[in-house]
Length: 238
Image (cartoon, rainbow, N blue to C red; front, top):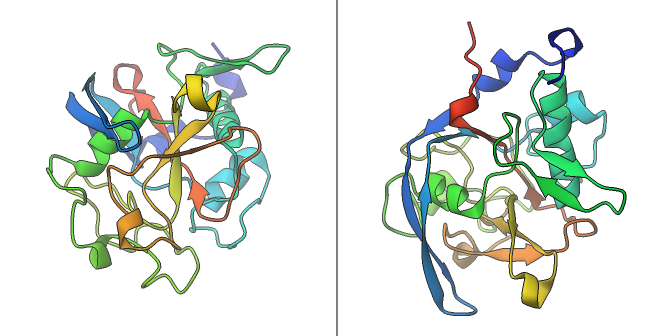
């Protein structure tokens, strides 16, 4: 494990913006293949907000976003950028990273590691719905920045209403990378992103929408991410 003396970022500050998500199950569906499947989930931690530009800069010293603002969500990041951030945050808070890279840049994910990671798409949809049954957890105008109200830009996180579990901006503002490969037999290494963004119509901002793209080359100004951790490895703040 990374030594305590190497810590740069205070983990208690990061943990204060994490929400404990209860264990449960979620039924997922793929409109392209018409398949449905159920996933059982253990309790986990999920950040209240998408990763903001100030946090991203603190950890990476990079400012990739098209729409600049400390409390705006970071965007214009690839899936690989997101997992590298997770590893850096883990290292800087003294936790074991979840992702490792071999000489060919193949990425391995350690599901038992205590560090920060991207949520799985099952975790993402389960947390987004927060016990509701529909495709949104509230009235879209009240919970999301989307094409009709965004003025064609991202907005500071946390300005719209949260869901029942206290999580903000799950729909609208920026899409969010998830950890999963979409369909390796058809799309190779393409990864999934969820949630809709500031330039999407109403129909794009649904908890069930699934999109995918290349993990190392695709980045756009309405795509960011939020972080998760395994609940059993939580380090409690004072």
